[in-house]
Length: 387
Picture 1 (cartoon, helix red, strand yellow):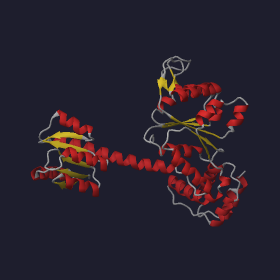
Picture 2 (cartoon, helix red, strand yellow):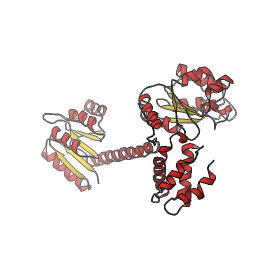
Picture 3 (cartoon, rainbow, N blue to C red):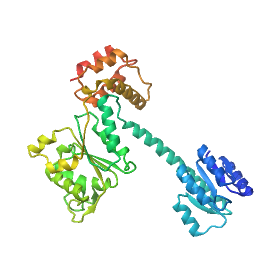
Picture 4 (cartoon, helix red, strand yellow):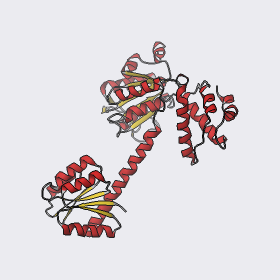
């Protein structure tokens, strides 16, 4: 059952549409003019709106524009004086569809059904986005994490390139994700490339794509990650492991906003924000000739340091609580309680693997401990295994 608003100044039309839609088991509200319609839209949630164009006072086109500013709801325009020009104008202003009076019953019901499906899809997408955004939340209230979050808020809306430095397992990807999610590119792709996991002979094809026949296994043309990330963000993780030849091509892409596929000759324009991350000392790599200094300066417009867990142990209780809830939900079980003494023992450990190691430890405890997690559980399942 969907919630539908019918807006028409003719009472007979309103009643007819209401009877048809209620016969289909929908909940229907009626408005006789634009002001009533906007009051409904402001106060309630609708799956679809049927809106007449010709009405006294505020006409349907003006109401449509205001609805588009207020809510993301499919609006089906209805008119007894329909023309192609009017239909095109309505669609341009955001209408879902346009139907001529008197409406064909089958056409009306199919259009309403499609509009409702779109509304439900939008709602599901919004809910899924909240889940995804929650997955990439940075947990912590320590001074260093608050500083990092504040820096992300300042940097994300800009177009500046960012170099994220930190040890393995500190959460560099979360920082990159948050910069993307808080930027104007949030609705565009976020493409991640682990430069350490791709062989040096394949990294250029991965980043820039290749033309058919450019090498033995290139049986068809392939777009690279720079093209796939067009309009969005490209995250180059472990940039310190990239080959020097690939570094040279990345530098050109950053300088000119153009790339050339492997085996190709044509320049391809790309609009990509590049965020890089590393656990290596890039300045030392520059001195040893393993990393280009000019690329370092291109990437490091903004440099962010992600602190190791040992420098923010006051965040461990929050992280443990977060991981317990997250892992319990994934496993379909109620979250366990972690006793205060067990938390204090976790805070005393060195955590060389940082937040990733803590996540693994919490998962191990939830699997092996049948009830609440105690200090004895830490002694048995954690302390002997922590480096």
